[in-house]
Length: 152
Length: 438
Image (cartoon, rainbow over all chains, first blue to last red; front, top):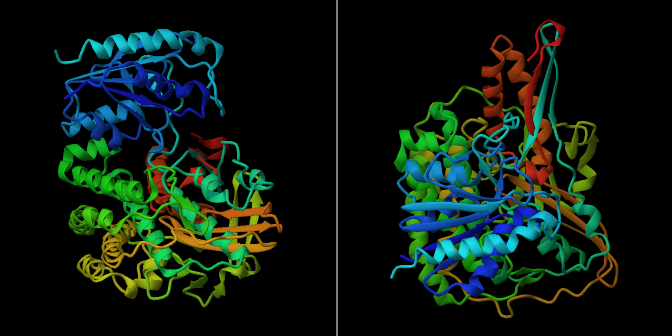
């Protein structure tokens, strides 16, 4: 199956919308051999999207405590992720989806989470300056990573 | 948003496995429960405020944004209220299509709660992930069933979250009969899964506890309640939805940005699956009726713990109902009836998965909204949940705080509160006063 790029986030919470916005840009740049999707992060939809894939790239805002705008690259199947502070089913996060996928054997062979440290996740549209400054780098990294996994 | 391991941990005492977030505070004075409050710390959403000045065509799309789990409920109640204000009654074919869309929401919302949020409580585990280790097939079934519910929303509503095909008067586009027929096998499969899910939850162990509160739901003709304009209770309430404000009062409480609702001179009441089942069991479809019988449910069900069984039965019914609508489906022509504006006030209510959802709008002759009132089921149930918690904590004061906290969470989850709709909760603290606090 083609590599899949998934944008996760809420574009009406400013920097949290970086995933969907990056995927919107990537969709115009990447070849047909790369699939793209925008999801809200709800685990069952993530599981359906990525099950059976050899490579999946998730783009999301990633909170680590680093300065806003910092680029992050995490191994989604390793120990890099932890559950979100709120266990609400409205936003259980990718870590919960990975844990559920692991329990049900519904994980891709490789899962990379690429993202940017958010600075402002308040209500509204548009990124903070720090995240805006990192956006092109994020898209470039994502494109490079996805293209490297296109079957030859 | 993704969180990296090793980052500074935030307080994780938010109540898990409810829709949205919130907090609960229990105060114990001299060994007795003094107060129980469901506390809210998210800002209110101001939907009623910013609906003012908008066009009468906009509430279905605007209010759908209140919740990502039950947007159809908001769209349907908004349509009912605006059409009432404008003196329009939609035809049977549009009503049937609305019913079908609503079935999708009941399937996906109830299935989420039954399998992923509520069931872990009965297995003594904290999440569906742990449940999958104990009963992988059950979790797989829940995910498959929920997916089919989402597909109904996509086929009828255009997308699963915040459907875009709903408008006042009907739909922007009615699906072709062939489209729905092609989808029929998916609902056959859903029905099979839903029956299996009901048999599964029927075998769980339930504490012996019945709620004493008044049960309230809509009357929907010969149908199990989904749409409708009459509101009834098990204690004689029988009113037109336009009389809602004469019988049910909303009050602000200091600890919550959600308003609380009470029946005037009667007190707390309960909406939702237990109310619908207890007041309309005889309107369930035949497969759902058989599933309820097999599950041992009697003429009514007042056990908040057994609400998981009632929700499962309602999923069976929703699958049956969806198949019935598809089999008799004729695309409405036109897909939406005109709803020209008319000065006045309209009332509407429908049965969201969590219970009756009421909308009221006042509009002027140009269709501009001057006033809006939205009362979600969780706002209506919140005083009842607090009441249940008060008595539960009182009866279990000797429990260690951690155990008490966990048991109280279960008590809340029994009601599947949608905090995001009601505007929002929860982190639980037990204040035992100066001699012992947590």
